[in-house]
Amino acid sequence: MEIKRYKKVNSIKQFNFQINRVLTYGKDACDEELVIKHLSGVSTLEEWYEAWTRLSAIAIDSNKYMHAAYYDRMAEFFLKQNDSRKPDLYYKCIGEFHKAFEQSGIEYKTYEVPFENGFLKCIRMTPENYKQTVLVCGGYDSFIEEFVLQVHKFVQKGFDVILMEGPGQGDCVWQRIYFNECFEIPVASVLDYFGVTSCTMVGISWGGYFALRAAAFEKRIKRVVAYDAMDDGLEVMTNIFPSLICWYVRKLVKNENEAKLNSFLPRIAKKSLLADWMLAQGQFITGTDSFLAMYKSLSRHNLRSLYGKIDQDVLLLAGEKDHYIPMCQFERCKERITNAKSITSRCFTIEEGGEQHCQIGNHGIAVDTILDWIET
Image (tube, rainbow, N blue to C red; front, side, top):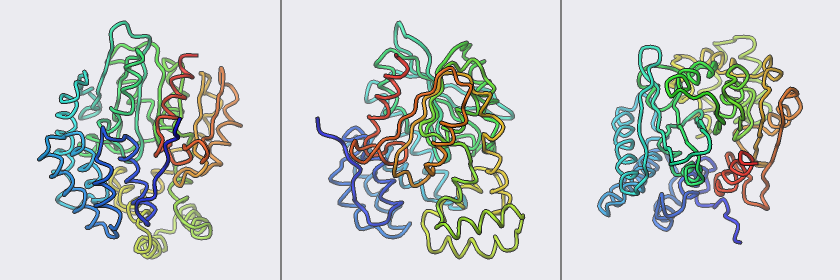
């Protein structure tokens, strides 16, 4: 059987990764030849936006709304919160996704679960005679519509799937419900709303931390999957820098040296697309207005005092070339989650095509691993 591979389309690492987020779904989500043609030479954020919106227009003219949705998702991705195009493009993209689900015959229902002064958006897909419920959340930059294709195989295998957005994700951030480390609280609201008494929870990307954190407190979660394993937000948010800069930024945050952070980080952001986006997105989702406040908020996303409270069946996943989450977090979780009912871990390699963050390029290998683990 041919192994799916992460593709080299664009020379800018972060552009290339995001392109592969679309290509990984194959023809259901995109026209690969067109994507490569329009995106291979892109080198600026404005060129990125123009290329994806051009592709979206082509897809809509061809009545391919799933393609348009993924293209507009990518166009919206790097727009900063102060860009007037961002909110309109977000809601356009959401509308395209839902039209695409109807075109594709995907049976689902959307819900607004009351939370704080607003709601948590959920999508539920329930087959007849389902086996059990699987609760799925995303991470730092996600909204649930983009995961429907990815988790639909769970539904086909007989699982009741609830996709949830939490604080700082998707629609929540537009309601000013911001990223929060205590993810067990929105999880409890969702489980209460649907009357779920037992489930598997799968956390994607930063959601790996959210799922493990929620499992430490919420015992209706019987099995937990960290896809991928993550235990320290500050470490992730500084891992994007070269080692010396990484050390220096962590030192400034620890010492709360706001003046030096404000002087240093904008210079780094000018040289790094990934740093520029992560710093802007971090302030957007945490509702903060300074680098120090953002880092202090994200540093609370850690499992230091919680490893021992995770006593469910645990599956930890990682990619050996993950450029977001350092491999040490996978290793720490393996070593420190000592009270789990059972713990299974798997690091995907280049040879099997799952080496990237969340196995982008060959996400099916992770989906199959999770399904096999739940069923056994």
